[in-house]
Length: 261
Image (cartoon, rainbow, N blue to C red; front, side, top):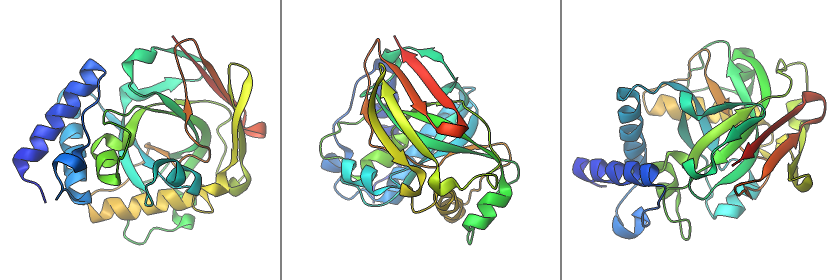
């Protein structure tokens, strides 16, 4: 466990790193007793400050839900972070690369809720009933903590490395398609770099959303109607640089793209 003062100090460090586009040393190396609950306390302090400054929470992201992502990070359990209004980009957006740190792209499905979703016993079927539509999305990862040797404690404290999201394609009711078999091809500068199938996310992408609802219940929170939930990546993260154009082709669900400058 760490103290309340440590939580504030870490939140200060991460705020400065985000402002200055820098990274901070691993938290676990400096706070060896830090727990997962401590890291969510840091994240909540960051989120509280953001909302107090006039930003608005519009959803949540789930991370580390697929074996490929867990293998890429060396972390073996999911996590979650907050999505704020200024993190959301329309399809085809031109995005400033230097507003983020260690910039990578992931391919995901975004669930847009039409009804609240509560734990502690939420299931895939509850998620499907609560979802208004599902839409293709790209998650922009931004890591404000040194990447080598990170643990889940570091990642959660860093708002689960959430930088932004780009949404597009064809909004689809969740019962109109077998979400397990949604596939995507990820291109950078017209060259295919990654591909994947949504079942890689816990066998069904809605499983991640149910996990999140139950985890939030344990933290005294819930998912609200209108929120966007990024269900987790089903490809490895792809590095991007200024000048790169990114496009993900989801077949019948359409495409989503952005360009970094």
